[in-house]
Amino acid sequence: MRALTFLVDMRSSHPDFRLFDEASGISRERVYHVNILENGTTVMLGRLRGDLDRARQLIEDRLDVLGLSISGDGDEGGLVYIHTRPPSEIRRFLKLPREHEVFFDFPVEGTRDGKLRVVMVGETNEVLQEALEDIPAEIDVTVERISPYLEHSANVMPTLTDRQREVLDVALELGYYNVPRRATHHDIAEQLGLTVGTVSEHLQKVEARVFGALFD
Image (cartoon, rainbow, N blue to C red; front, side):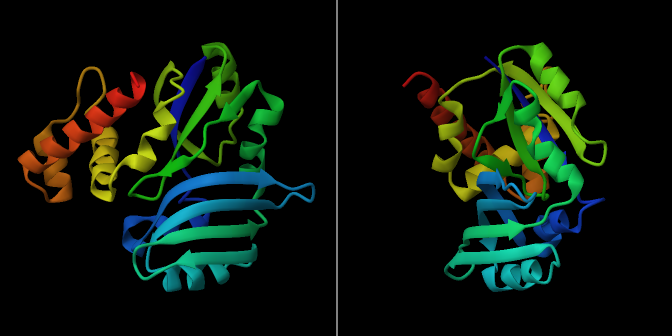
């Protein structure tokens, strides 16, 4: 099995994506489940972090939101259930597993700048490439990597602390794990306002969890 990891960004064409960028103070940590109903609407279960009262107000103001439930305390974040009428490009994107021999690996992780990091799984690179080419043009996609699918990898992210996830997100965005490597601990530290030693410590803990999961 093969896994294609890519970033999805619709902030330029879909206002809802701008609700979860750094400027908003609300982050979309992950999406646990998404389901398309027969009438074309979708229901989603995810997790938000930040001011939940503000998140509720911003989301309820959207005309395409048909139902909303947010549970959680204070600024620690909480679960969000949304019933919405999505634009056609998102519906087409979510229907890719119905039209190609692929599936999305949940949970889908959010990045600190409001994007979604999606892992799409298929039997071969060719199958994944065909599905990738069918993603609507309105959706900005940045491919990060294609690799073997590791069944334990998806279980690692929920075990990381918020700071570890933040450091890992920036490391991935800057190309720290690219070959050849495009960023250093100093670059990551500068982006986050941390010391190089702190970044190094967090990445060592992240990598220990990843390798621990692989060989557990």
